[in-house]
Image (cartoon, rainbow, N blue to C red; front, top):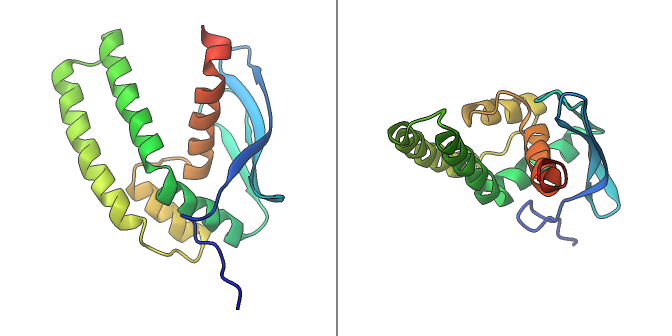
Length: 159
């Protein structure tokens, strides 16, 4: 009997990444999310902010990525959100008091994240429901990939 990998055991990589700086200053990219040699999804970001398209071949691949992000990328996403709040304070767009409130809300969100990560959706729409409960207005797979790519390439363009 063969044992299938669970999302916690799965290693998903961003590969075939190509990128450019768009006219309006956004990083535009396309890439694949892969498990070994298998392409699970292709992502294309036009560089106009939040306009990424996620193409996947089958629901099983999409759900594997969905669970992998929920199981393995929680700390990456939490750090991104905290850094974003701190940056808004630094820029003067948010008060320190407001940032404390937002960070307290993040604690609630990540408690919910742990609970929802245990759910086992069987369809894309069920996965999107979970993602929306966590505050992802856009597809979580595309949003995660954009943050990952921008963190990886941001210094190249924004130094």
